[in-house]
Length: 379
Image (tube, rainbow, N blue to C red; front, side, top):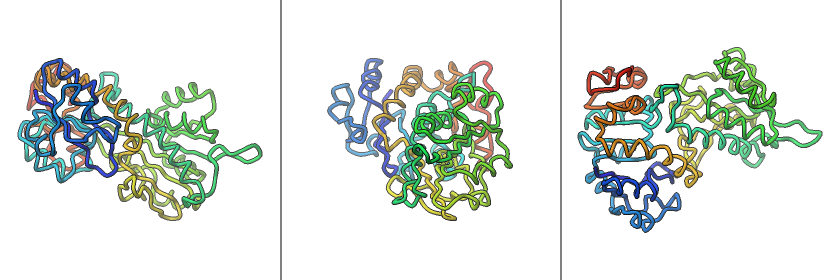
């Protein structure tokens, strides 16, 4: 199989979908890897690093897409890339299709096999290809929040951990999954007053146990969210429903009750966001906007700011699945791997992931009506 890796074109996105170690593994397995010129520079990987591992460097994204049977990316394709798709081409990347009707239509029109990192799911419910970036984003959310609480960024002028005699900032984290847990680790480590809200009582017990009482755990409902948001100096939205739009849990009225100079970081923005007042996706170049006196941060590719760490963390987990797709061909690989089958969002011009179809108002076709799937698979 020919594996193609284009350079990411999302603003300030410096990650890359394969490392030299991944190239070497692909080549040793009998495959060819073509990489766009300077695709890895933002992550500290040079063309020479790739060629030494056995890759071929191509000058343009059009050449990469044209040559490749499977495209590996980090972020979802953007409009300049839509016309580069080929029928039957495998696209293996973060797709986040539920809030992306135009991208979805482009994939359907070209009959691309769209396999999304974020919906590959193990039988125990874990999302192995989403986890490392969730860890990065969760930890970054607190760094970012602490920065924008500084006065010269428009914040209240609060030090997250306070000092002796002065109370710390109040950090409210909505969602106790991987993002929320990693956010809490950073916030607790910096000495903040931390509250986590989640719907799952068992998860709250687990968080209470691992943090040894250093965080407050609160059952998530509209009443408790409103009360917590009002008190928050830093609010972090960490809610995820695999493949679906994030629910709007924090309303405009709740945001209006926050103190001027408070900060909101919505990590769920790449799935549409969970904060009602966030009506736009921002970039690392202009990451914030102010509404009702509250600083809103809504960058959809947060881990791109720490590209080298993120690239190596991501490719550690994506490479085994990419090798399986290359070695067996996508049909056989999907047939044999329940988790990989869950990753198929679009194929043969049909939407095969139910949450995506519902989010976009498109017809849903169960995957087993299009391709042979593993025993026990439920779409």
